[in-house]
Amino acid sequence: MPIHEKSLIRPENLTTHDELVLDGVDVSGHWSTFIESRVVNDYNEAMEDEIAALPGGEYIHRCWQCGSCTNSCTVHAINPDFNPRFWIYLIRMGMESELLRDKDIIWQCVSCNKCTYACPRDVVPEGVMKATAHWLEMKGHTPKSPSMHFDEVFTEQIVATGKIEESRTIRRFFKRTSQGLMQPWMVEMVKRMLKHLPIGMLTRMGLATLVAPRTSNWSNAASAIQEYIDEQHAEQEKALSLPELIDAAQKDAAA
Amino acid sequence: MTTKDKYKKVAYYPGCALEGTGHAYNRSTKAIGKELGLELVEVENWNCCGAMEVKNIDPKIQTYLSSRVMSVAANEMDMDVVMAPCNGCYHNLKKAEYDLANDADSAQVVDRLSKKAGHKTYESGQVETIHALDWIKDTIGEDGLRERVKNSLSGIKIANYYGCMYTRPRHIFPEKDSGPGSESTSKPHFMDDLLEAAGAENVDFPLKTACCGGAHTLSDSDTSTKLVLNILKTAKLAGADVIATECPTCHTGLEMHQIRAEKTLGEKVDIKILYFTQLLGMALGLKPKKVGVHENISDSMRFLKEKGLA
Image (cartoon, rainbow over all chains, first blue to last red; front, side, top):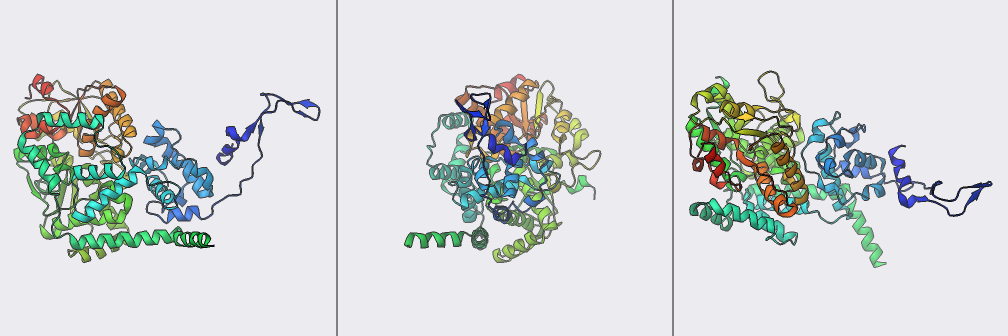
């Protein structure tokens, strides 16, 4: 069965009849299952181009569906629904509603690059996963994932200081995702860390959280980076026709 | 100049993690450098390489950040080799090098940002980026180590864990998979070679380049815990006492999720986690404290005492 027809045999598309006679043949009961007829007409023809316009998605058109990415995938091994090959197929076919069924797990790619290593066509599936996760968020299909929050907190700190001070990044991430910092395993970890550390080391670590390490003469680099990020973001929004969408939504609301 | 001489004095790029959770790696790398007579000159006023997080926001910003580090080493310090012990930093510098040599758009963005930031644009080829493993392997090598070992690691069974960023994707490491003596991207062996020369017994470990889920250590902790638990259990089954690491993200990830697996899944795997530089340092006769064993989260002191290293 071609994979784009797999959706036809999902439970909600299957029916059995308690009493049904067709041309004199009794087809009642479980042994005779009917597939609801379904016509796919909701192709999103712009989807592939939009995802290709986001960083990482550039080479999606090269895919020839060999499945090496899914076969080598770290996340697929622990969650069989995580299927980069299938998603690339859906994107290229424009089957948005099918893709959206998996919208909440696509961001879970761990960027181990096993797919990129295995891909015979240099699709860079890892990049496609990131571009797809971005696309889902930019289009409003999903809220920002925890991973996206982490990336943002991290990048903001680098723009601001040039360096990362880990405990600061962790605290800000937990705050932004409204999680308590004192999870039992974190507490246990800190306890074990403190057991052997000399006072001098603790003082040094404490100081780092108060006075973040920074790259000096960083301000010009910081503003250049921020300017570039904003510029790219505006271009990406344009590629996804977001300004038009927002415009149309506002007109709708006004009318 | 042979590789051996060229790597004897290198620009040292510790990166952010080595000043925080990975401080033990920083301490032990410097300690063995000193012990082996190799000179490390820290990159002046360095910045973050961009890590995976900035790459996710915008890959070209990551390229710029990494290029600035190489620009400082080349143009302000006149160095031609940058040594980065952190897999993330090493990977990103290599990736920036590749992109700048092969992608005109990246080169253009880096040039624009460098000019605005007020420093010389890094040109591909100005420096060579190496990992701490290359550094020891190509200067001292196995024979050199064998001569210098004071406390053999004999009787210690090690699973060598390299992680993702040291070998993948293949194209950013053109020197790997290039014939006899070179590093392999599918079955890396540099760490195995060095630790074996220091007397250790390497176990046959199939997950050398498996992923620890470091990208989602905090943002998807359950996935990370599962991946780490798999690595810990497999190493244990392979007969290892110790997992040797060469990346601060992997190392901290293994330690954190070893505890998390214990706390949230009730799965306790008793295996020690040490940086390869810590193991080599102790083999060279350095005390555990000199190589930062007390800075690790997991406690291996009793084990090291049993093995005569402490």
